Image (cartoon, rainbow, N blue to C red; front, side, top):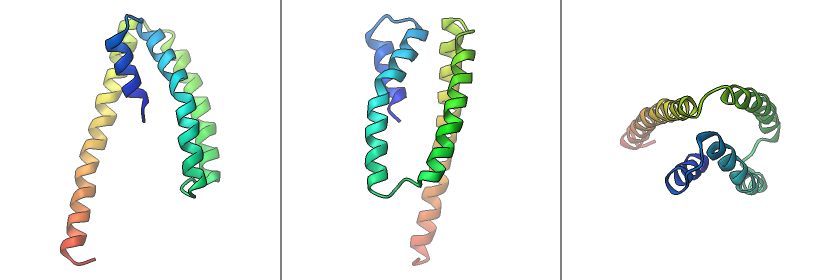
Length: 111
């Protein structure tokens, strides 16, 4: 999503503390998330039942995560955010190679 990009931009272009940076970034991407979600739903790419379940879990998880984040110092929050980016980004990076390998094998076998 766009949140890491917005947070990186704000971190580089402002002197906001980490808590303000995260809150500002989250509020600023909400309209774009709603707009792109509506477009995906209109195109038929969004199973509404699954989306509703994920949304409920996200609301609960976000509230818990925000409460926890507010207990951390700016430095601790920055380190936690960067660690999550590295871990999740690393997993996505590794998974992309497996997906690419699977596609290459399918093409090579004529499927």
